Length: 289
Image (cartoon, rainbow, N blue to C red):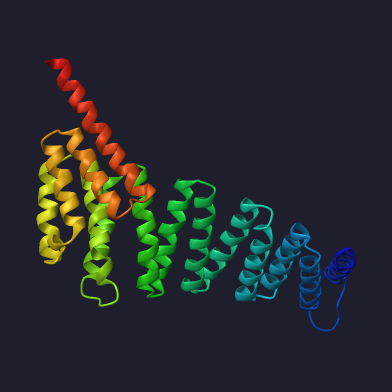
């Protein structure tokens, strides 16, 4: 590894000498590009990720001097993937530069791909606000690239994050819209009841029993088969428990569903919010009597 790092340092010095010197023939930046590429790859082989990342950034700036924007964006991506080994913050900064360049040159699919990668990094760091922002940007860019399926995958993440932040109507709109898009697609229609279940859980969190009942009717209109599935019965039974203000019944309905179809942490979180609200209402009424 030490010899690879030494090679990386040597190539980097030669590249900087080219840039700082005079060149009567050709472009000093073209010469530097080749040397920076060798330097960065040597640092990678030596697992010196920070040095490799910094050289890829220098390489990107050379490409920009040569007006080679696609190559510049690619170098920022290479830098990001080096920084991912040691620093999510450094990786995000480089990916963001790549996204800006890809957007500028109309490579929307590439911009979307790396917006999504930034969103994944923020989510892993539990920075949900920024994760949400980049998944939204990714969805918009995927739509510009006519990549509807990828756009919807990002929108589903936005819906989940929105519900976590109690932006229930925003989440409901996304889940219902994707369900509508999927109903006539043979590959996607089997996911419709999952989207409607998620939308219904968000409706439960809003606590408006009339809206919940109306939603279940709309979901049957959207998908006439929905009422045959456990997801529909689950929502209907939960709505009944809420209407009756019966915490024990609500708990029993959740346990029964979970015993057959285990609930993920996102659904469990929403259901716990509903249960706690129901408990608080029950206690409030007990205090009044």
